[in-house]
Image 1 (tube, rainbow, N blue to C red):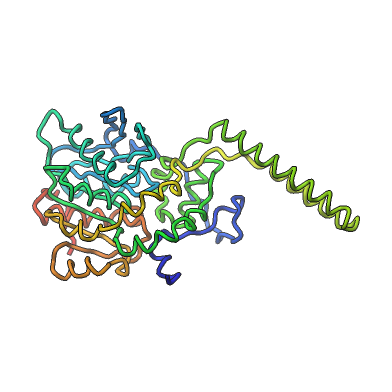
Image 2 (cartoon, rainbow, N blue to C red):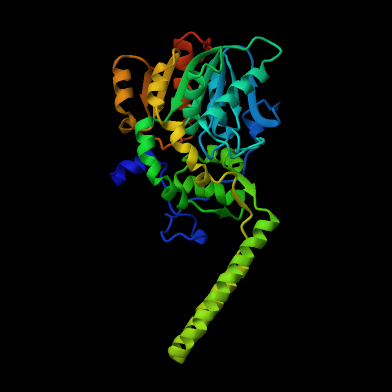
Length: 384
């Protein structure tokens, strides 16, 4: 597949920070940004734990009334990826928002965090909605999903797991381009740093690498994508490093018998310098909350047949894309037939809602008001 096309379908990757193994330099910054983590409390009113079948799903909520937008994040992200866009949406129209940490992500804990199949995740959403409004009639539900979350939203809607659903919004996921990109996904994931010394370093990498182009969004979303490295993991890493050093030493001793004294002295100097640098460098403290490479068995199930499922959903539909090249044949025909509303935001990366939260919130509010799901606030003007 054309490399340029692949780059547009996957989040752009810069190699990691200088001490993370990068071979390319990062352009100097004119001024130092603030990459300090930001709490969820700045953007959401409350945090709730929804329990069922031994599972504990973490959800973040704001507002009340009708409709309720249920936000589903992409693979590797968390509910905080919706923090800014949902906060801005609340300023534009009357609604409530619910952002969910999917199983294996964020602060959610389930009996099987590795079961990320489309069927299981779709059932999760239906059960969460039922549990949230078990004591009252559920409001009109609009499902909003990005990437993996977009696929799960479609599956949940197509399976009719949420009786009160009235709308479906899918952000930057299309069956054709997603299926084509899967073969290169493992290589893409290997290009990411495996660990970070601090949350600040992870936030900075995310912004400078282009995974999330908005520093404000990265500060609230990236920390929830990480977990602390356990002492056992640190010990395992140290033992692995020690073992590798022993092999290197044996190889160097064998080379000493064949090489000159000068060459051996140079090798020792390099080795001592490397040892001093590794000793002075702080040990990694954080790694990714979920190892996305291990979710590969579920990838095809998320996206195969997605376009036809999306078109089959008998609710109002909105598709937001970062590039028109993502549109496949079925969706192209459906769009020409007026089966769904579509907007392209070409200046954004894969995380469209994080890169341009104001525009996405404007489009969401317009979608809600135009379909008479929500009433606008006085200062709101619809997107044309």
